[in-house]
Image 1 (cartoon, rainbow, N blue to C red):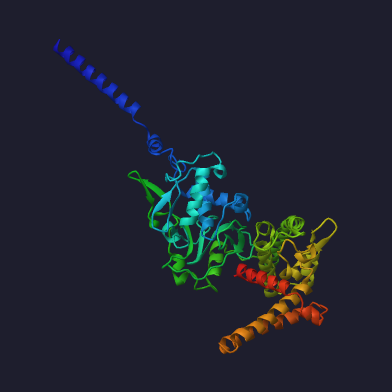
Image 2: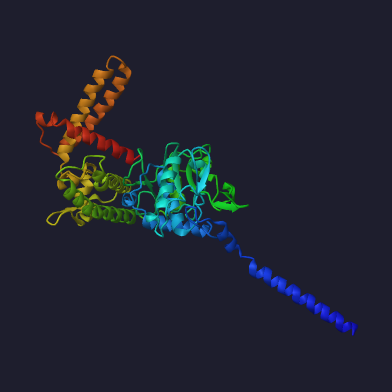
Length: 480
């Protein structure tokens, strides 16, 4: 009887304990539930248990490669300068993928998806229709700049698995770009192309450029960097330490990294794509890429001409921003120059190359076509201005553009002599020599192109000359 009593007591204790355990198990939320409950409906967007990983970084890169185009910020009416581009792209993707996003403001505060400053605004399932999110983007743009990027990024190793679209290229304290494409087939002048914007902050097209960077310095830090990962720790969002990220490395700051190469740019190219391409194969691939740029340019030029031929597309206006081809023309000129260097350095048969280029036809209107060779010869004279004639847009007003630049160079010399001739003769002498060298090259091109010239041509329309000078200065900046 005593034994039975103990058994009964044991069973009762066991059942009570089991029931208590079930109650605790049922009433205790899982980790994701706890995280979800910690989120507020007042914040910009919810992330649940989603966190950044190596795989998420690769998905981000794929999204950047497929979705960011030169008119991305025009389509969504988002103003940018250079630093705004990487910040907003990162936040937009994070919002789409329900991932954490953060940024350091000018006064050192950390803001992010958890911020509740815009709780009074409605949300929407589509990011571009989400008023709360768009308000946070505008605040992000106003409170971040190139000076805040070092706190939000970390330096990475230079390899194909870490240098993906979405990686940042911090070129100096005043400029930054974001890797838009990584080309591993030799069809570009450099494996990396960057999307960039500029001051002032406004709604504009992005510029697609070949990778260019001075030697990076650890003190800023400059160079190739990625955004840090926000983590939730003790109920508070903070950044993961830079050195804990999987791609972290300071190798790009070591002189040994680029010692065997011409410069840092070449060292990065060889690390990303070390293949030594056959010269003919390389030339064919670059021609194919450039042809694609030219054919994509055709509808852009036609649309611009139809919208702007009657005026209203003054440089810098909204319509000019939409329809100009300044960035695209800069890429075409760079590719053509790269093509020329491949031909010259490898002593390729120029007759054969010419025949190949002439066999490629590009229909620029319904009734007119040009060959690849035509554009190859005249690419420096492509007009990016949407209200110019179709002929001028495709470089067939070469003589007029040369003459306009000659007039501009002469006027520059007269201006320098008048303003600085007595006040700063050394500066005046240096500047005049520069303009004289420009004149010499332009006159050589004038003779080479067999342009018929009169005195009135050289002393003609100053307004056109001013506009051409401004355009060429912008092209020079694009090709830096």
